[in-house]
Length: 205
Image (cartoon, rainbow, N blue to C red; front, side, top):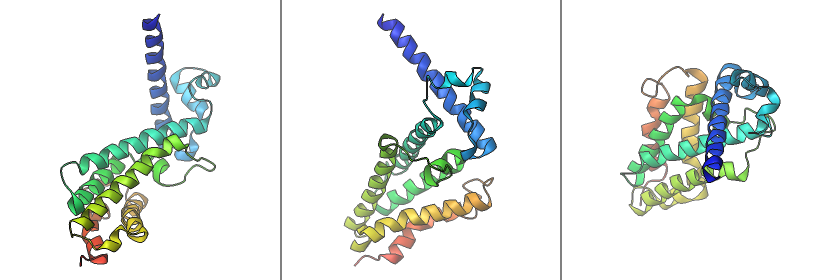
């Protein structure tokens, strides 16, 4: 009986993964807000009502994608800063995150902008985003403790500046030249300068 339940759970998870992959495909073709569950169902080879066994609504699909994307972005920034601390760790985290965004542009639109009217992620889906903020804030506080940044860098203003800088560069890149790579992008090439900009704004005592 347990083996049967495990197989059913595996099949259900595999079908959910396939639905999410197809949803991303449709979003890439029609725009993030243009997701049609009827189109997803047709590509999956089932009737639209069958999808509701896996996701009760279109917003539930967005929510699952939001959770998956935020977790993947969190993993990317953690990997980037795994072997360094302070400003170096912050720079590595920002660069790793920016590379992930350039490789996952459709999903990034759902995560960092508001392309879907009325969609608000659930608390569970939003939790990795809060952890990203905690991780980045921790790196900035570490840089302050190491004497690389002044104390105000860890203030509410300072902790808001770093994400604003990376968001601005990524927005400019995706708005103007989304086909560029991280290395060739006019704006993404500036990501490594963010730590020095913070150091200039909040010089150590």
